[in-house]
Image 1 (tube, rainbow, N blue to C red):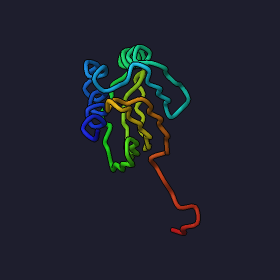
Image 2: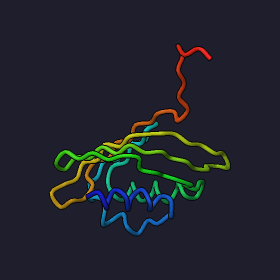
Image 3: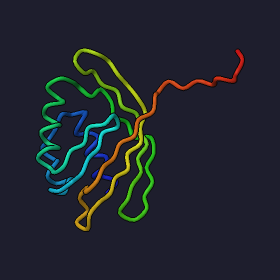
Length: 122
């Protein structure tokens, strides 16, 4: 399952949609870190195609991964250009696999990549 997660992240960098049917359950649920959600593989692939018409993923680096049965937690850093605007942020994905080892649920959570210490004096 670790390889499937890595393949999915790299698919965004490479703009390679062909692996989606092998990675995701037909009834998959996906929620992005800023609000949109998708139900089913067809909506997921439509979003993937639409997103890549506007943007390029420069990096989606996995920092760490943890597994508990068919559930995974993945910490990552994402960097892209979307509609000619650069953006980057850190995040965590909670990923659940079904009995056929396909992703049935993926939920993203975002964090600013620039952190600061409000009580630290310089």
